[in-house]
Image (cartoon, rainbow, N blue to C red):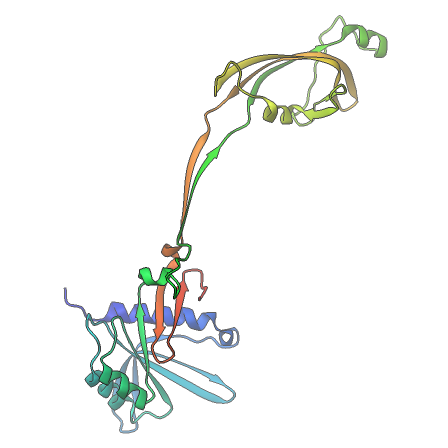
Length: 284
């Protein structure tokens, strides 16, 4: 399929629109970049320009056109001459030329003499990820994330000190004593070790048994001086028997590729500067 240059024109227009959006002036002016703009010159001749935009500030209107050439070789002086001819009879028009590759020496000289800015507007390459000394920029971050889930408690059986219950409460010890509440509402207070934690927090304290990394486990824990309580109910705790499971860790590789966010680069040849435009609107 023949290269009509239309795709490159749209690319340059999108890059220029992103640059304008990043400028402070766009907070006051809604500047729209137009493609395939027709302008009638002072001789009544309709001229076509690949890209056009204008804005008004301080009572003056500023108009800019960009001629785009999607060439695999350097732009010749004849193309600069053609742009000069198209803009000669249109006053107050700022001409700019954009291409992917570069410009012949004669084209550079002619453009400078006629105040035409020369741009290289292109997709990224490896040179955009190093500084002038060849030091590489951060381009990609790879994280191999391992997510270890807390233990899942299937069954929790507290061992209550019956004698303490008889002496310190009015509960009927002939009947089962039950706790009804969420696992973050039932607490164990281990006075001997100066620790206090909920059943919810207990799941993070449980570890695999018998040198196993994961599976279903049973554990019996004894206390010298501890209590279990929920709201107004507080009982002396001798220990507990617990059944819990530990799942395999979840491996989640994460890759942050900054190069995928870089949509295009503009090189300003006369200034010797370069700008990189990212998807999020950031310009560097």
